[in-house]
Length: 241
Ligand code: GLP
View (cartoon, protein in one colour):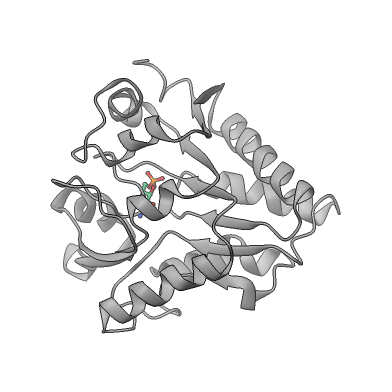
């Protein structure tokens, strides 16, 4: 595991964008695993800036997102599809047909989850998976649990995740209670993983993820067992390391 210390959020965003850029330059038709949440927004802004300068070309790049709220349509401004479209896809030359987000409107969760796994398989797997970190150690929407979930599945969101995400919704009742997410097994199959963590409120959980025992109670702790993980965190998030 490589741990890169960033001065602050902007520095973190540039460093993470540099790593993604290198991937796209080295393998233009790479499969990027993408993430939502507030942490990657700066990374996406930086990529857009370099794209606009002519330094990056996403025309052959393929993408698979980690997760989506169950029940939200693509045009719902809280859906992760909407997030990805507005924070990245519409600003770059990625072919929208090569972008994938689980379909939150598919009511048959088994059908949607196995379809999604097949998409990733047909792509030949993920080259670089970007991850944010939930306050309880979740990655994607893999919440603390008794076991590590293997493949894409439907999850019940924990109360703390619902609380954390309510700021984006009109009221807490509007926050979806379930999501479709890649499993821990799906994430661990990515050839390279880039975890981005920012802010003092993540310091304790980042410590537990990197220095604590590997346990499904802290889902991201499994990353200790992956052979190619880069963590880019700012000073505030690294305060307890
Ligand atoms: C959501 C997403 C996660 C993300 C997490 C942390 O729950 N499903 O993929 O990592 O939020 O988000 P933030 O970066 O806003 O702290």
